[in-house]
Image (cartoon, rainbow, N blue to C red; front, side, top):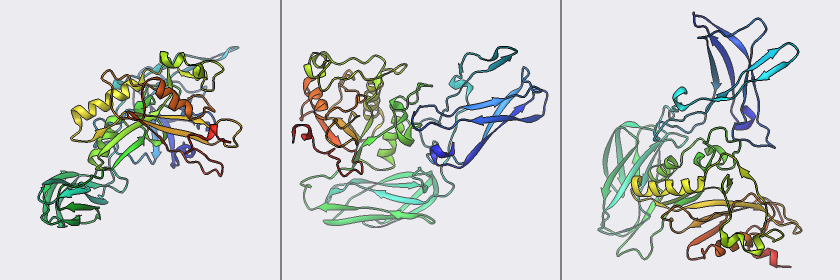
Length: 417
């Protein structure tokens, strides 16, 4: 599907006969309708001529020739598992084609797909805290990636210079740590060098006394397939987003901690309405959220989608408590709507809702973002009604569409003249 993913490739189909030999089959590939986005828009049709038949024991092999996503799976907790389902059509005189039932293949019936990093390492990077104190030891990390940012194991000697001098020996590894300490204050960097790679580094401020503040790096707006897209044949793509639908939240957090070297993170999946969602009682009783109120809207449930929001909270806590070596994980979701009618602005309106703390029962509140033309005050009102004020939740506008009337940052615009 070249136009969908900007890749160049094609499919072919072969029948592998039980008794030996193979022959090509006619194949048709549907392309996604960009006006009606679906989670699984790619349908492969296999056509048999009147002279062709499939016998018991024959196998059909689909082969893709071309490029695949550059996100490697070799370093992740598990390989990529494609989802497949199929059905057959029977043709009879006077009746035409009659479709049979769908059969979804179990994971045990589909070989996992392992995507390897590029053959050559491209970048070697040093990671250290941005603020340090003289005489206080810290951990310095050296990370090796390919040109796409995938961890790339190497074998050989890495030289360190400037702030830290020495040598690290990598044995089919892509990350190593060493303890270091600085004796004098100032701005310091450490450069790692390995043949054939480009060195990436940053500057740390070394203070003579305890730092008056500590700078931290993080990402609070990214998406994964765990928002809902990895549910088989759900029919909706909104629960995840963009090119990350095939990724897992656990792997995303691990990448941010171990590869990017971030200090904090929050997966903010789109606030889609799962099949069992209901408004909290305090919100449902509010006139603004009742029929006729400015915050009311029916929305659209996604049938078959379970409580992904609770699952996302549980995943974040599990990474923090069982896997992470220090990454600060926040629970978050992305709320979205359009600007209210009559103001000359129809651009998209997105907010990252970032909670300070996790809930022990994974029951933080969420307002689905499937009702159009809601003023942003509705989101703030919702949070206030469920008892979450500015001391416990942060709302961050992030979508700035190129529109000369865009007023996405103004939370008060609906009350202004």
